[in-house]
Length: 181
Image 1 (cartoon, rainbow, N blue to C red):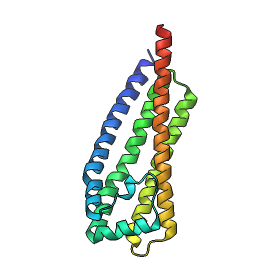
Image 2: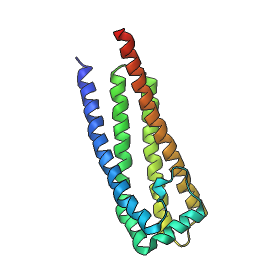
Image 3: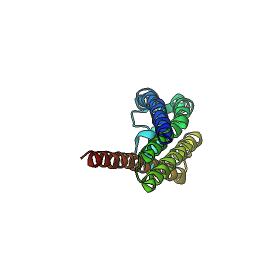
Image 4: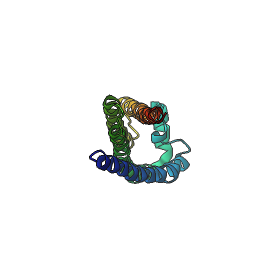
């Protein structure tokens, strides 16, 4: 009986956080990030999982113009201050849900840490983007490198956390099939 309550709680949390995260993600993809791409003609920093060079960063920020830079800081960044936490909460809730179904606690722990680290990397990326925009036209190569590395790390950790969730679901399903047979 005790396992039912946390299982339902974690499942509900994952669903609610996931819906909220999806809403913010869609708003960014089809709203703010699409507008930034239209203004600059270039994919925004947030959409570059492989990072970016100082030359590309300068081009993007220059091509945004002053109103586009202001838009990035006042529209995209506020949304991207909420999204990483929602994504991490979604993933952590999923890991707790899987753990309540008997998936390895080591897998749950590793996935949880990857999820939190991905959110931290996303916040570091956002800080770097803010520093680049606010210091333009004198962008430090170190700032660009730090923001770019944060983008790469964020992408890698997020991908790893999602893959660990899928691995956990696979273990759970395999155990269920094996127990049924």
